[in-house]
Length: 341
Image (cartoon, rainbow, N blue to C red):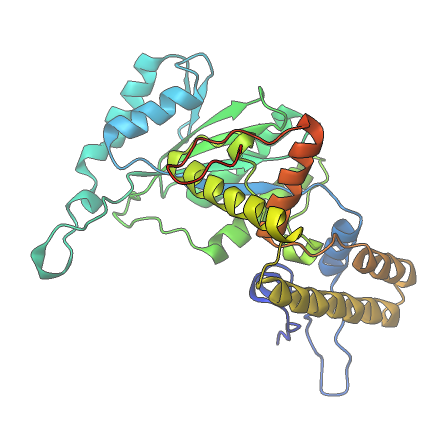
């Protein structure tokens, strides 16, 4: 079966190749499968999107233990393991780590070239978050997460998970041992994450919960802006970098009354490709008799959010902050500049 993906920006092409189908012969017309039609419908009808995110991973046994303590709220929340155990306290968590034998992971003793130790210590575990927006039932998220972990890691990598419901969106923290039972290490790349999102969305649908997995770009959304700075970034490095960007934006607004970003032209061109791609999808749907859905696709493409760069989004957040609070924010001072002046 040949595949003929539509030409789109990289993340769009890899995450939604709906304009691809089998051909019975040179005279036949490419058609969407039923699964592809369903995915198109979920996207244009804005079905809730799943989130699958790798949030890091401990490089020492102590760091892994601390992460387990954090996600279990020091033993207050149960930890579910790949062997069906339900760990109720910190002592049982320590027992679990002793069974994982993280201190013996071969990756710790991996040598770099010329017989030197690697500059960066390898991860002993991968920390993954599986999430759905509210008001998804938490028990459904946990059930889908269990299926996800079983299908991806059972009999290959040890893992443990904890359900969190205290935030706006129910989510599961999944800790996966990086070294597999066969000694091979788990390496996570973009293609794997894309497939994981699609599979987790499918497992949520199997629980009776509408869920979708498409790229931000295909939905007309760029990379999410960080809501830090006066908006509460906790990581020190990110906080400093973001503060510097906001200071530069404030200076430019004061001097010119506007913010310019050279990356905008590329985003505009990408948006044209995306809109054209949706039109081709609509044309194919028309040809297949899916007239109503084709109309929804065209309406969706015309209502995509405005194209904005990260710099432009930060500027809008900054202006909104001034409008809401009626004064300039007070970032930590630099020796040569003070935005509050």
